[in-house]
Amino acid sequence: MEWFECKRNKRHKDLKKENLRDHMTNLELVLNMLAEATTAEISKEKKPKNFVENTIIAKQGGTIAGNTRREIEAKTGKKVVTRLNEKKLKAKEENKKFKE
Image 1 (spheres, helix red, strand yellow):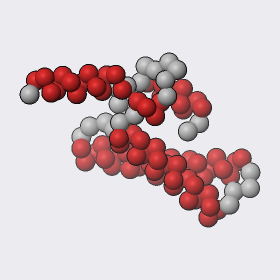
Image 2: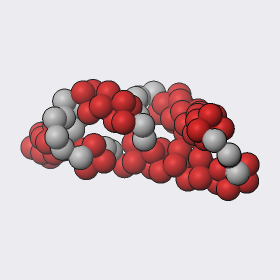
Image 3: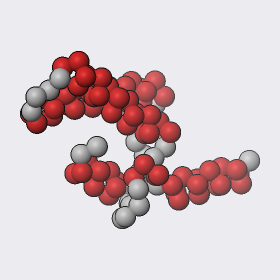
C-alpha cells in the first residue's frame, strides 16, 4: 500500500500511530491481500522494467480488488471499508451481545 494511501486510511479510521492492518475488518484484509497478490502475479508475468510500468501494474491489481469490493457492496447493501477501528469494532460487538 502506498504511504499516502496508508495515511489517508489511517485518518479515515481515526488512527495515529497504530498499525492500520490491526484495525481492518476481515473483508478489508482480504481485499488488501487480493490487491497485493494480484499485483504480484501480474508483475511476474509482465516483468516491469521501471517505476512507471510498476505503477501501471499496481493500479491494475488495485482495480481488480476495487471491482470486487464494489460487487460485494452491491450484493450485501453495505460498505466494506468502515470507519471503525479495532476499539470501535469491539465496542460494537459488545453492544450487540448486550442487546441479545
